[in-house]
Image 1 (cartoon, rainbow, N blue to C red):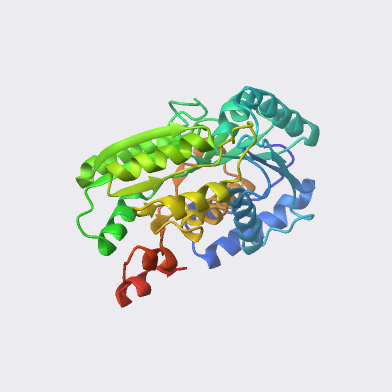
Image 2: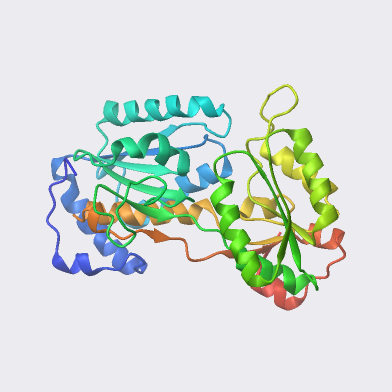
Length: 354
């Protein structure tokens, strides 16, 4: 990576990625003391989506907070810029142009490290950055396989180039386990999701998990319009014990205008007669019954940890791909009451209850 003149103590290279705060602070102090010799490192976060989207904002917050914990100081050790591709709200035929604009931003800034968030940034930007010797890339929020789908790393253990990162993985098994603690006889699930690029790999993994859990997938539908979404929810509720929500963020109304995801969720919560489970924390906050949820804060923090390793002299080629390993058990108490579910003390003690 250009611009970095570092003195790296061998001990630091032995620090695990999931180090405790004390060890991370020591590593961060070393990076801060030595990384500044050639001037601040330029970091550009490229988001596939838009500012104001909860997932995006959480990643930004988690990333900044973790760098602060690592004693890396903005303006001294690094400068930070953001670029938003907005692919939840623009037409699919515009994705490539958004990726080109992101690449132009990388070159305009002369970015040293690009943090590429979510799958569209990999498809339309990182594939072009892969192999360049003037920039390092850390991805996060990636649902597809970066080896097979994008070809941006050689293997998970040894990425082999200028790209490393953190995979985003749903916690469907834990979500079903939590639902079964509240609802007996859960044996079938329906998947309803938007027609964007996020859901397909997630749903495929969850269908495999459902089979292993003895849960029959009785309905699956991808939709792009609000009318079709509403129809799919009604159909799904007639076939399954619960509906699992992934994303509902690229839905358009009859005029072709984007419908806010919170409005889609609110209608679904109000009109589904069967329990809704979620993948991300915002679904439960918005009214889904429960989830072992993943969130953007942790993805941002994982990305910052990987950036810190690069600050300390590691090459992305040698930094293994990681993934989120924890979910947070969440329950919406208002929805539980609506469904006639009484929350036990043990559930309240083991879950975040809204």
